Image 1 (spheres, one colour):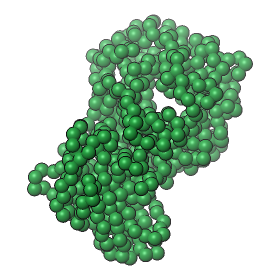
Image 2 (image 1 turned 60 degrees about the vertical axis):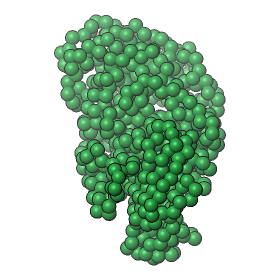
Image 3 (image 1 turned 90 degrees about the horizontal axis):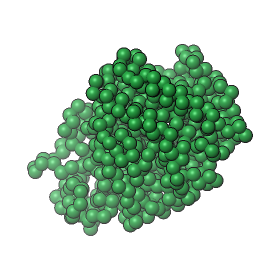
Image 4 (image 1 turned 90 degrees about the vertical axis):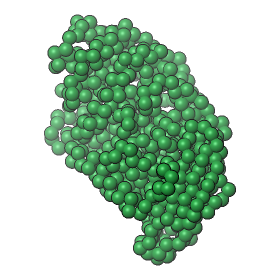
Length: 605
């Protein structure tokens, strides 16, 4: 069976797990029972043996439209043909009960005509490394792994099921107005079976949950549909149990087809999570901010190998994320190696302290004040940073080459002390103001003198280099430099000439500089494209910013989702959907809308 491209998917989830649903009716990626659990379906990474859950009408020729039911994460796939019209509704139920079943509900409905369907459910447990046994009773099947960490799973159906080796199939016919339902998830207690009334109730509970949540959004601007979709997607990535946020629900989707830049993003990066916090606060979602801060509190007392904080954690806060390769999987379009885990947890990335302090500052501004004990941990962390901010590190892009003194890391160290000073002053907290002021100003002076290249008339990626880096686009967004400062304007011109293609922005010149220590190239980095647009808006170039923003929205997939990168032919690359991209979209949209509406001065004050 051939599987669809990355961009030909919608996602469903319950803030515990996420499934990718292709336009052909196949769930070809699912980690279960949690975001970072082993895969149950991995057809996206190996179309021969990865496994899938496929439901499809048997039309000779058809058209397909996939969409979300308004203001929800309930996905509808509609198949249209001369013989009839059929719909497949997919969702993971969620409501007020935290003990609710962790399951996928798939309902097939015929709108017109008489339609034949085929269903195939072929789970492949533990990253396709564990076999299973299968028991079946007419409408009910249980898949029991032979070992490993995976729990047994059950499939319930309102039509008869047939056993095919270790898989389940079904062939059935429905007429207009008829429907059938499949429920896939944990094995219920003995004697229990899902009932039609129960399923109908779950559907309405789930729809009400998502509609009530997105109704809290304070964004009423020009791009409401895209902003709300981004917010709904980000909510899917936030652990309901822990309050942490994963960067993406997938692993090893390549940044270049056939390349080796294939990483596992099913973890909580402090950087991504704090930027997401900022984006959600902009929309008025404060509860998520408080939940993440509570999770972050549990990390402040840690002493990681390379400093008080680690770059990336497991969603439950665990610190060891050993990186391994799955050589038995062929990879998406034969892009190997397929990696799980992420060795970046070993790295020193000094920018995370700036993002951490920005998150704490925002949480104090919009939520509860920091506790005495929490502030003592902040003092301890900043004491360490005051002694270490000049160290070479691996930077925001987690390079696997030699450590360098990266501009972005310096910038965010400045943010750490700047936000700490602001917070201490506003909350009348005790702090070593003199030492913090001296450190903040020393970092600022070094950035202007040591990371500026007279020949290029631009800020550069790292001290002593001639390389450009799109992460400098955060300088005006972090309130470090005015977007109309002559030094910034000339930096923007340099970035435009070397890293920008229309509305698409590359992180750096990967194939030319090899700064990241990894062979090959990559696509444009979509978050950087949104940063670029917001920089234009902040500099007063509103017409250009709006045009490029609306063009960039055209690179979203059919249901408004983005992966990490966009390739040369417009295809989506990297893990999908990507939190970093969607939070940058929200930031650019909210700022640009306020300026266009005249409620905010476009030039930074």
